[in-house]
Image (cartoon, rainbow, N blue to C red; front, side, top):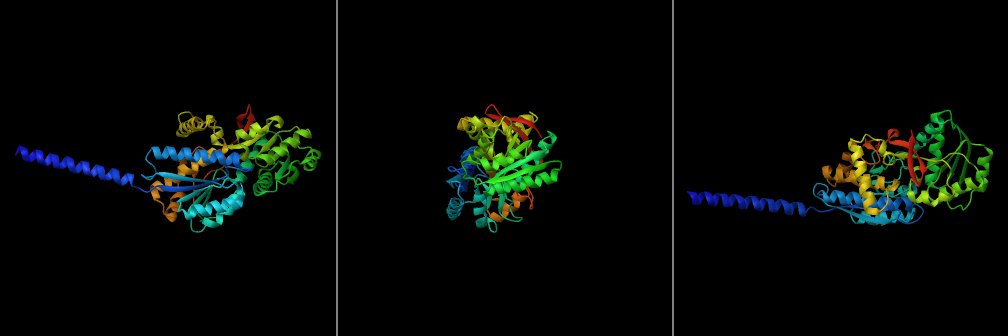
Length: 385
């Protein structure tokens, strides 16, 4: 009898060991989910793209260390679009041929617009990292961060509260500049009590904008909005200094970059303001909250990995990968199921804000996720809402 019991125990232990081994093999053999990342690692938008790629890798590494998306490792295929729409389109096409389950990027409006027709009707999901596009309802296209119009509205609300109601608009003629200019004009109308006293444009390739800024100076504004990103924005700021237009300047969230701040240090306005998402003023959050803990962990991990604190690009890249991993873990890689699941995602705590998607809202963020910061001491300081 005793021998029979020993035999049964041994058989049971063997079956449990085999089952555990089989489960481990099942988890280990789950095919990786390949996500294509198309960003501007070179070119005029590289101040965004490099950070986007770095933070996307960081998020994927953290997710993989926790077991991946429902046991599937995330493999990122990162490509450089050189800040050019034709390259963005080419890189996206090549990634789709490699059967990626989703695309993240590109970094700016024109490049996202070039890629959008490839995926908007049949997928896979493309999580554009520019806030400047408006994803069509029911499409497979998402847009990161807060809508351009919401950033512009926060700008105008803040300027009005500060008593700065005579505003000049300086913008570039590229897609990002045109989108920002439209949003600024609309915000002036919707907020009320603010007047556009000058509205000038210049090509992003310009090396000086003296004639346009002379019109601005003649209008005697109390504040100037420079809607341009990177090098072209620096050209306008330098021109403002040269013409001694000494008023507060507000610029686009695309310039929430430490590299940009360093580049313009010699001719930065005395007061340079930028509308910013929560990852730039997270120290205002309740210290015990889940959002505060996530922000603290993210900022520490990014700085440890890359030697500098994260700015605008990293935040949207980090959230995009985390959101897609959450969706892949619950819906698998079928494009239609991913779209349905992502459209219903509510209360997802990211570093940029708390996401609440809907079939007619493929962005999930709003005015409550935006505050104003001021460039100071090489960084960004919260100044209010």
